[in-house]
Length: 283
Ligand SMILES: C[S@@+](CC[C@H](N)C(=O)[O-])C[C@H]1O[C@@H](n2cnc3c(N)ncnc32)[C@H](O)[C@@H]1O
Image (cartoon, rainbow, N blue to C red; front, side):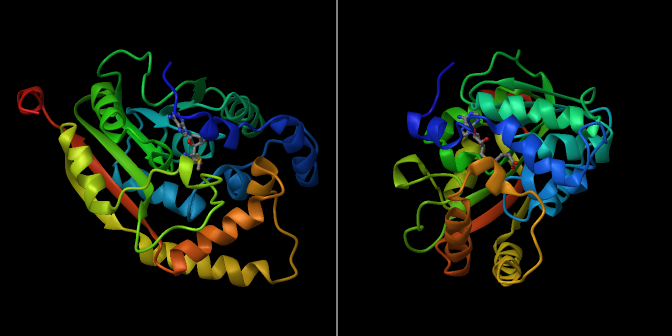
């Protein structure tokens, strides 16, 4: 399967992740106690505004129990589990990182959701699924790692049934250069941000029509400000993304907060609908 540059793979390599999780999660009780998606939320929702953003995207995309949902760049599976649990559907996750997919399967066992979700290693740019395999495709904080947006959005369109929905929640370019390392890239070589307008144009060019559009930047800025304030408090944090990304994570998270607060990046939440075939042929 085609992949982005090695830097992205290295950034998310996650060696020994399941063992690190076992150690961190021991603080929440023995291995045989089922964990809740809420308890894992600080660790397994790898995007701005965590749990809340996933729930809002699922609502905006009107996901129903009968929908076949694909989460592209699923990370360690937090969004897939939350959506399967809260919307009653089945979710398939795909991610480049073998370590993340292994961790996603492990956490699904720990939450008892393993029958509702499945995870595969693969690239969002070239998937083995047949055309029109899904009613909904989701992409949360992944597009910024992908240079070839045209290919990405065309692949998403291919996987959707006519009338299916594509929900995206991604970091977009703002004013000025982002600071690195960021949570998604150690340096600018693995970061491929587009601004919101260019994102809209790239998605529409693939045969997807905008259905809901929400500039999430103000909410993201509030979240960043609250996290900065909380970081200076004394309460020990729940197992968080530091377990996944290692000791540099506080620096990455601090830069993400600054990037948001200084307007260097924004955040876009949007849902698109796959055009019917007649319209697609004109693309
Ligand atoms: C910031 S994390 C977001 C994870 C997840 N969507 C979430 O919100 O919790 C970005 C994820 O995208 C994955 N990724 C990056 N490029 C990819 C590609 N070309 N195909 C599949 N996954 C990709 C990374 O491995 C990583 O797990």
